[in-house]
Image (cartoon, rainbow, N blue to C red; front, side, top):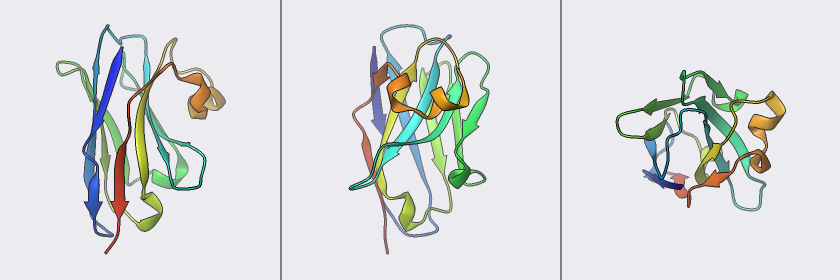
Length: 127
């Protein structure tokens, strides 16, 4: 299984970016696909996740109303649309895959619950 994250870059406060996570190596129908981020000097934190099978989504409170996770079956790709970005969103963003469904709220937000990880893409929000 390979996850390839892309789409990061430098953006001004208030701007937007769309991250992509291209998945390959198997079918992902039973997977929960997530986005995490890790700012410098901080722990990796959960951002959002989506069930591949039914598109049910989960978001952390800090990004609700600003970030939207989605997936494209035909392209085997998961997206994170990020709007109204601010400096606190600056981080390396990682996509991840969890076998066995959504699990509990606690499982979804814990990096250790995920079985596969992409390489990360840097998002910098700065004027």
